[in-house]
Length: 387
Image 1 (cartoon, rainbow, N blue to C red):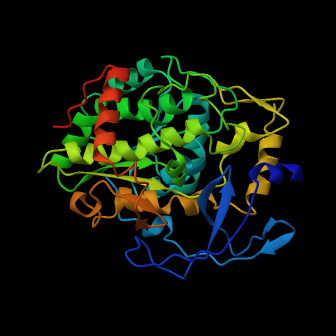
Image 2: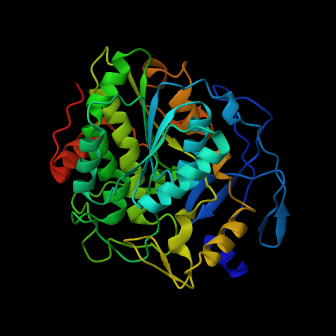
């Protein structure tokens, strides 16, 4: 399994960030830049881990981040987290539940959601946990989720679920390229259908939150308006690496969505919208990159890994140079819960390592964002007017 390290084509260099304006404080964190498929990504390395590249070992310190107990009390508030059965979603759901929130685990596989629910309950003793089936690759599933939601308020909508580096081009139930369909269009439709619930929560006091989990990989992306589903010959390329063209386009769409949603919300509606890059995180997101296995792009299951041992082995290796999910989730948790981070403070911003950070030039282009919004409306068949 050590050969899996070759898949990342890793090169490290120190790049310590300034801590001004950070959402959290603590010891200075050393940052390494990891080159994956030509894309520079912020990499946080645990002080207890050695990252090995080119025969050289790096041992870097880490910031002490807030624990679940440090989150503000969330009793009586309702949080929806997509992809909440594993990785960043599970870490976020656990910490929000520990703060007293009612947490809805919006997951594609209800049985995995039920397992996650019991794990969270055992850790937090919070019984206010619900599992609700949601397949972001199927717009009818999004519609059903919203119908089951009814007229309840939604204080936090954390758009966390995603897919990455699917080796061969695949499509959703609605015929969209799968990265775009799951990572962006499904979340666009979900936000539109839950908008009345977000407004209802905002009207009850405080600011409702929409937190869009993106990636610094968006900086390598561009929106291909003439071939949005990457159907032209050669358009779907580089997907043997984590940051393939399809993935980076979808992550750029995430940042554009957050910024355009903020622009379209009228004054007086206190829904704070942000996007975030969690960095390089030790989750199952890299499962499609396993060189000796085939991944079923529909179910996400690894063919040839019936007991999950090979994926667990991969994550043991990743642990040497990737951030643990509970640490990486701190920025999105702060954006979801910190009372000071209201709409005026966040204002559609893009956050990395706890700081509001400039995204790519294309992500900051209001004309591109508006065009992508209109295209998303046409593709999903939803006229989303956030008023």
